[in-house]
Image (cartoon, rainbow, N blue to C red; front, side, top):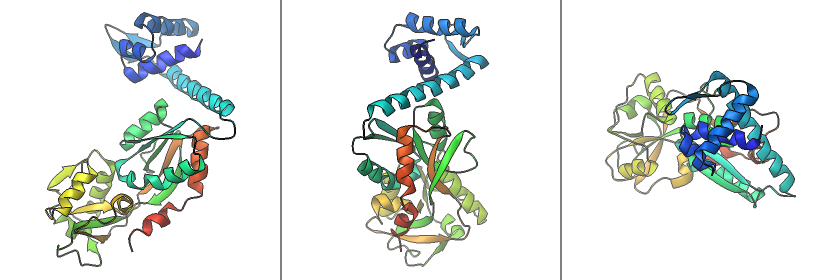
Amino acid sequence: MFLRQLEYLTALAREEHFGRAAAACWVSQPTLSDGIRKLEAEFGVAVVRRGHRFEGFTPEGERLLAWARRVLTDRTTMLAEFTRGERLTGRLRIGAVPAALPPVALLTGPFCAAHPRAALTVLSLTSAEIQRRLTDGHLDAGLTYLTSAVRAGFRTHALYDERYLLLTAEDHPLAARAEVGWAEAAALPLCLLTTDMQYRRIVDGLFRRAGAVVSPRMETNSLSTLCAHVRAGLLSSVIPQAWLCLMGVPPGTRVVPMTGPVATSRVGLLMPDRRTPSLAVAALLEVASGLKIQQEIDQLYR
């Protein structure tokens, strides 16, 4: 068994197509297929369900795929360990839920300062996509909600608790209030993120706990679109306090704390639960452990 054959297997899982997997590995399709058949012969089991096209993996193939991902991740970690010298190099890949993107620099900024030779990739992903890509080995860490929906096999590191504000036009009758209830906010023409985002599902749950049903006038998956409509005085919104890391209080608007149901949404790092984490993940955890992100976010609104 060669590492190259394991790379063929993981590429096939990622691409779900023999031709695309071969192209991703820079080999011909017959070469990739032959490599996988040799794996099957070595282990004495069928790995791939074959038909006119790729139809998935057998149960034995799924088990072998999980091992292949672990072996290739360990190979990457080993290479980094013996080539980094005295400084961390390589690329740290982070996936973040949209609601956590504005404060992500509170984490990545100190990381870059501590490891100037390391590179970063930060992607906007849903919480489900983050867990899937961590499992597949396509991410090193996620910045996401640390809820019961997190599957076994992951470790977590809490960073802050999400708190909520009403964002509305500065001349709106509620703009001068000290606080606003969830039921009051539900009666406003609102712009909220779309329901495929966990933040929206959390907010909907808080409205329900206040005995209110929210029916937003507009839904969007874009933070800039949401803020633009609030600034225009057309709509209001409920936003996480952490969003102020990116935009502050937008000109022409006011933020008012939400009162009522207490949110328990904790945001933090999600990583594969490995006995020996990769050097990049270990370095990220070391940086995160010395930060006071909750305090920095709370200082944005007084």
